Length: 201
Image (cartoon, rainbow, N blue to C red; front, side, top):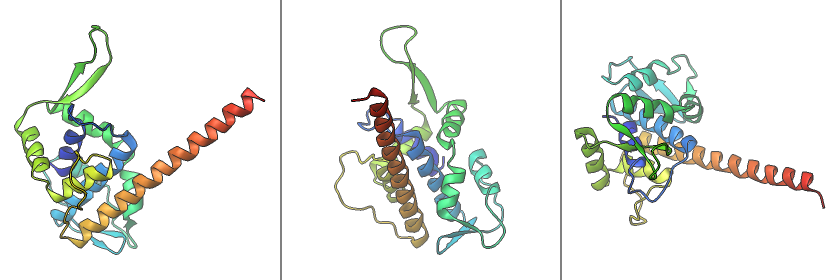
């Protein structure tokens, strides 16, 4: 399993008190992919740019896809631009992949037989590994989960990231999620103003 898949599973945990927006999660998943690519030495970070190395074989189709989408011409792509480009609809892609792999299952919510479906993690070795990383407060997973609002009532101390490139990626993910929230708030205000205009005095 990858950090992105572990993060997705953690956000789907039915015991979690926080729901995560698809846009926020997609940005964080793109960041998680980039961090795993750094760990695999498939990319390096130079300032705010992603410098690709050799095209690796990562034994994960979504990670292979991420590596194949890297910009390989100088001046290379900025981390922020990568997050927005790669992150588009990425949470839906991870949900589909995890359902296909039997890591997620649809459950009926409510008592009605035709109630809305919800998706929950299945008790598999991969799910247990993700839960172990979360329970052990693995720094990268904890940092990315915190960015999307999942902290499990943990202490306020920051996770200790000991890699400068990883720290940079997490910081850029945080800024992108904040930017997305600002866009949401602006749209909400504009929609409310528009509704008031039509409602009249």
